Image 1 (cartoon, rainbow, N blue to C red):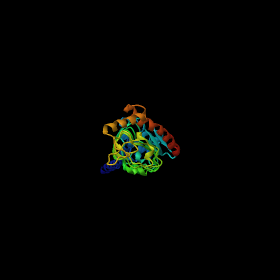
Image 2: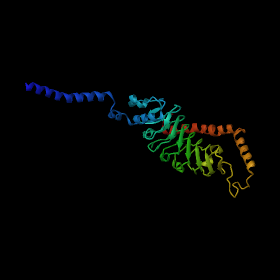
Image 3: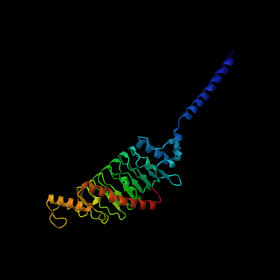
Image 4: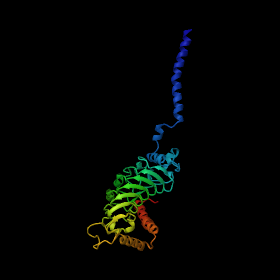
Length: 310
């Protein structure tokens, strides 16, 4: 009588482990495991990480379900080796932050444009973008200082940080970007002096509408640009901006006119240069139209040299 009971217990004990492994197999197959996530290409993961922080309105078509085909996502262009070389997400109504360790993990990226969105917060460390040639972060709400890592991007030809809320001083270290062709920092909150930029390649330059102060350095590079590149910085002075600096010795060799006369003379010069006395029209012409012509020519040369179209 005891023997059948013994066999029954033995069968139950053998069945329990089988039931345990069967249950875990079903449970594991019903939800994605970390291992499956790790199978996504690294560039795909970087783009998805960016979307999770920058696309709070869920505008982008990036999805883990199509992660293996990320080269077909809107705004993404890849090389023949399926590495992202160009990410252009402009006018997308993106709202969120440009989080660290997201797009900056795209090691082969040449062109990055997030122009005309609603991104906030600081610009992250960009040192991972060692191949970057073109960077447009303009017309957002970025704040804080220009990250020091920008000055390490030695292949950079175009840098546009205009129309943000960036503050602090303009980094002198940008002078080390020897290939820089296009630099716009206008319409921010930068203060302090204009650095003595002396980049032979620089053709487009604008630091207007900030809170810069002091004498504009007379370098061969800065001397190429007219007053519109420095406009609406009321405390800038020097020969380049045609405004005498306060000193014991006159800058232009003659005694300084009384304040009211100097102000009237400056307004007259601005009106003569821009074809009228309306300061708003002068502002639009100096900060938009003049850079725009050079902007289009600059982009054409940049993309031809990097073999990447836009």
